[in-house]
Length: 337
Image (cartoon, rainbow, N blue to C red; front, side, top):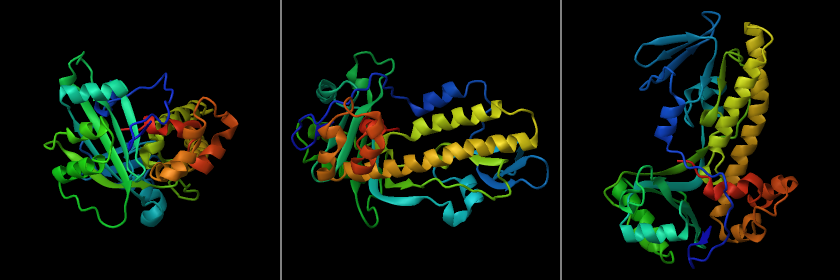
């Protein structure tokens, strides 16, 4: 963690088991042996015409199974089916995030690596946060010119985002980084303006249950569909993995293979997931607001105390007061891509 204005280290976050996962490669490895069909858009769910659940897709195809798990991301059709378009709709945080992948000139890549070999989290008193890190160095060896880097820049905003194309987004990132100390300002200035970039308000949705829905036990949620959260705390993937673990454990614990036993297993899974997801979403939002408020950040546990000295019992207190304790403290280095 660096003070972007001065370049000084705010805190070195210990991450002995830190991993960066390329989403596409991760999906390829995890999907080995699974019949994954891409390009599908869900348009209808039917749980009344038979003992199972039938999903109808935009291309007219249908698939029937004993259970449907909606894990299709923050803008989930399944979530809105379970909760309705109003209760299930994502909310808009006041944080805008811009993202771009780019290679760097060798001298800039070397300067960044000298600060940290994987990732640098930068916080500026103006309220700008930037994350610079290695995105893909696989098979590149010491050839820094071929390493792909990811840049995430976020700030508080109100009103429309007037960034109509990738070049304007990248220039907005560079403009905010002009106030950064060396070498970070120069690294940001070297981002390739010909790359594709994205910018939008960060969405979130505090997880809530759907008790009483007639499809409960046949339709459920997992991952970002269940608990879309802002990324600064770095807990999205962690919670998705926990969803998978808890769901499988409950299904494996079924005393028999019956619709009633499956419903009970799904309800047990949801009882744990909903509370955990709600806490994770709200803590992540609090963390995102905190890292764009310099005074609050300077009072946070991660800056004033550090991670190693934070007691487990103080984790909730730290999250409430400063979004800086426990898992929260790992947020700046745990961003997902």
